[in-house]
Length: 224
Ligand code: HEM
Ligand code: HEM
Image (cartoon, helix red, strand yellow):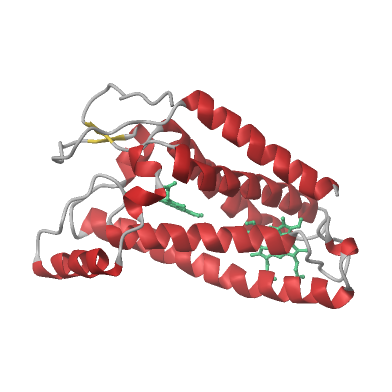
């Protein structure tokens, strides 16, 4: 299905679509917090940012099946036994090395994706009682919109907590474990070779098609 092995220095880990997804997501989540803090007319941009995030999350869910080796859910969603083994290795000393997400990190990625999906979806039905409502709010009863708004507000705290833990974990690896995970999320490569079978990157063309499909679904939903 058009997979290729990337060239370049070091061990390939994150394909281009995963890296673009990640840094766009970071920018958009920050912009969601900024727009909601400004309020007023900025809420229009909050809605646009929300649609963009929803598109990215739908894309990432598809990429979890069609993407490169380490983008796939089956590569990083591991059973509880693997998570416990990994956690024990972290406490003992030199921790188990993984090319992609480690077993613990894999679950934190799933939690963030799930929380982002809930956040963007409930936003579509939310209202701020003043001047802004999500595009689907008018199609549901007032109480349903209130419920969606309440979930949107509570889940915002959960999401930001997950993000804070995520950044703390990345900094912990950097400063305590001397394992820099940030550079690979920029260059796509890990500097040292970790023994493993071959790693394949997903096709950028397939990624573009999947992104287009995700955007079309979001466009259709907000146009209902
Ligand atoms: C709004 C803020 C952020 C969100 C929502 C977020 C979300 C995510 C998600 C969903 C992934 C999984 C990527 C994938 O497989 O597609 C990820 C991985 C990663 N993120 Fe973030 N991230 C945020 C901020 C940051 C920041 C500020 C840094 C750097 C300091 C960072 C560094 C990383 C790294 C290094 C990985 C790969 C971890 C690994 O090696 O397993 N993230 N992030
Ligand atoms: C993942 C994407 C999104 C993020 C991260 C996000 C984040 C937030 C945050 C942090 C708040 C403030 C919550 C509070 O006041 O306690 C908020 C409020 C709000 N958001 Fe979003 N949002 C997203 C998507 C959307 C979308 C798509 C819409 C509508 C198109 C939307 C509409 C609203 C509205 C109307 C409020 C005000 C709710 C109230 O007054 O309690 N959001 N959002």
